[in-house]
Image (tube, rainbow, N blue to C red; front, top):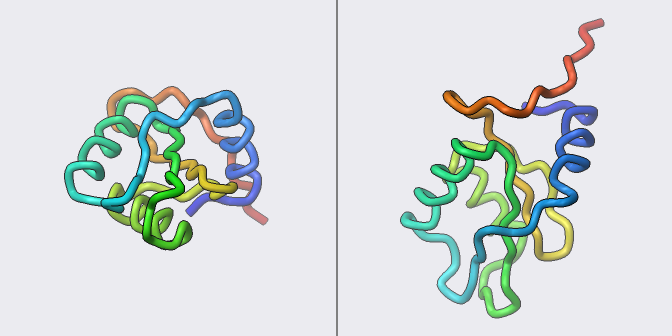
Length: 101
């Protein structure tokens, strides 16, 4: 699980990104989840746009994307979902350390 500080850091990192996937009328499917998982392995952080014609609730779509790709839901703002998953082979993002009290 990400801490608030880590999520804030990831939101700042994601700010300049453009969405590379779109969820439309068909909703979330297996092929999309596979492609997003592959992209997360390569990039670690990405945005997904939920189109206006998507029939599912945006919160449900965001949860389905996070669960289906085993990633963390960083943010859902408007119709844009920000996902993060630490890469096994392409580690680029170094999260702020968790303060243990």
